[in-house]
Image (cartoon, rainbow over all chains, first blue to last red; front, side):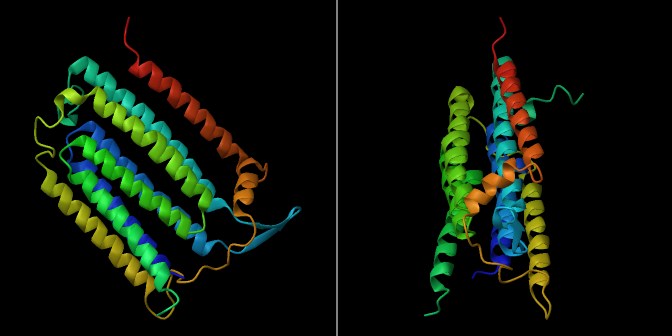
Length: 112
Length: 175
């Protein structure tokens, strides 16, 4: 079986790629794509830790059951990601309609 | 040939998908190409889920991320297309962003290597238990079991509902 560290390092690299997109890209949609990459890196981490560190099976009324905390967390990250991208893209479209720009730096009315 | 060689080969293939797709996503000047690279990266993540014995999450990854989220992003790109590629793709602080991301990765990777080496490594190299039985059924039970995750499940559905209503309200044209 592959070592846990291999998955974690790939996830860390993906997270940092997404972080670079959030810090450096100018287009708001590109920033949202970077956030998606970061959320995916977190999901890899959650599922990898679930796979390697779930302490065996728990006996329940229906028989043996694998602990599902990690996969449940990952499913909630999916939900949050879907909600985040829906609201984020609605904001991008609204800003584009009102100000004719999708460049994040040009939307600075709240800065002053 | 080691018995693990096949696993490493598949792991390497999906790693190339994930990292190559990610780098393509952040470095393409054309946003549409970025979205296509993003699909490759997300597909690699789905492959990782299969390697980690979570086939349901892999299916959801393909359905929700590739099938819905990326399509939504492509819609947004097309709706705001007029300004695409007119100016620089990265802002003036991109070098600091790159250095910060590299330092972050270095710190995390150093921590991981330290935690997985030595006589008593913190990180396991072998899973504590084999996944036996129907893990998909267990996940379904866990999400609706009163003693497990039914409350977060309901909260998540309310969050999704609120986000959907909010997205419609924000994106609607004023009359």
